[in-house]
Length: 207
Image (cartoon, rainbow, N blue to C red):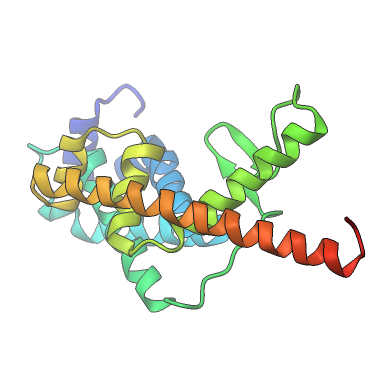
């Protein structure tokens, strides 16, 4: 069935062809998983979200408007599923800097830097990733979703507006506010880290 284009697959899937639907999943599983991963910050959660998204897509496929992009429709379902899960867990989310992430480029760890980095550069890069992850978790679900879609997934404002079902102006405003909040939170985190380091050095009697 690999020679069928996406519209053919969608029409066949709507008619109950499970092989066609499985082909659609294979075509889009990476974008769904990667968006869920950026939103949830945990690979197992992303896998669970992806499974739930495709189950919802299967149940709702008959209502899919074929004039729209299938990927956009899946992004919307993924976004809404992540938001629902994040709201259920509000205040309970944790993450580990050692956690392994599975991306479309393969396996990596958050603290891993470029091979050519010096030890000092590797440490700095790990600290910056930690700051960004912590700052992202301070955003509201809506602001986090918007900035992830734009700055992590690289979607256009128009695509994001369609996925989130918002006006273009609202999307731009939401992303701008999210970026400003991220900058503020990263500065706060850095200040707190510096205070902690100075306190530790004083306790150890270091000048």
